[in-house]
Image 1 (cartoon, one colour):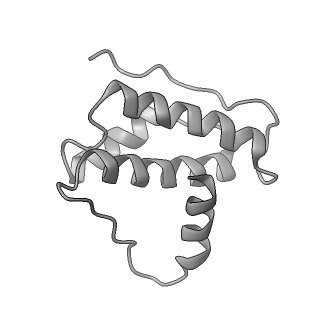
Image 2: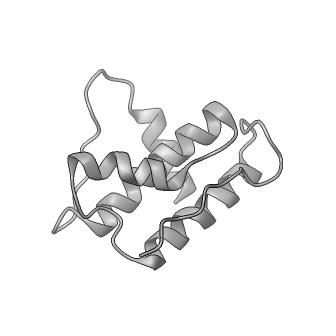
Image 3: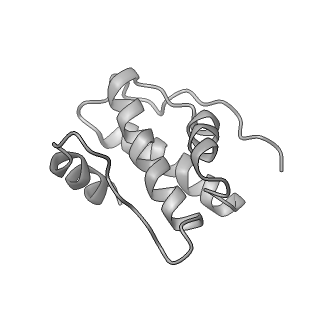
Length: 102
């Protein structure tokens, strides 16, 4: 997933948006778009606010990131990316805000 996100960032050089969609445009789509923003935020600040990213995306498309497993995946991805990324500002996992209670 991290390789796919890096390749997507490299390919996204134009002024327009990146189009992402699965059959319903909800869970997997939301996970990929959230992961993309997580990587950008870690690269930019060295920290990440997963609930804020998801909340912001849900303003445009409700239902993105639907399950606890999807949230857990995003937090794990953030931790792995922050440690493996040479451009991350911190070598430890980023600071987190707790996910909202369901």
